[in-house]
Length: 141
Image (cartoon, rainbow, N blue to C red; front, side):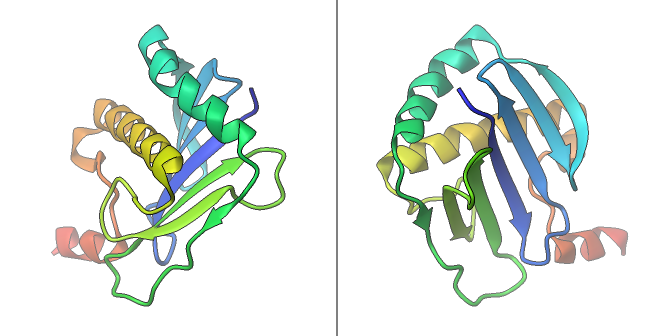
């Protein structure tokens, strides 16, 4: 299995958070492109993600939904396979998990988002959710 990256970010790409699965064995969590944690996947995670990633791996049609114009609260969600020229899925979302990419990808995005949130929560409970630029400004006041 190839390396797969799931990323969620705000419109200005600040607060970008990503989950990278390497060969269905190793998991890395990234914030702003920097690795903040890494570990082996558990048997339960492999059981949940394995079939979804296998079916996605067989699908060759990219699902790209052009983000609609909106406020600063919008999110961009991307799913990419390492050896493909462009991301497999790119969708705009008002809330997580992202929906609208079809049943297979919606289920996969939901699983990956839950895993990323759990990993971030274990690391720093206060920042487990996607933090958008306008939220950072509000927290500083």
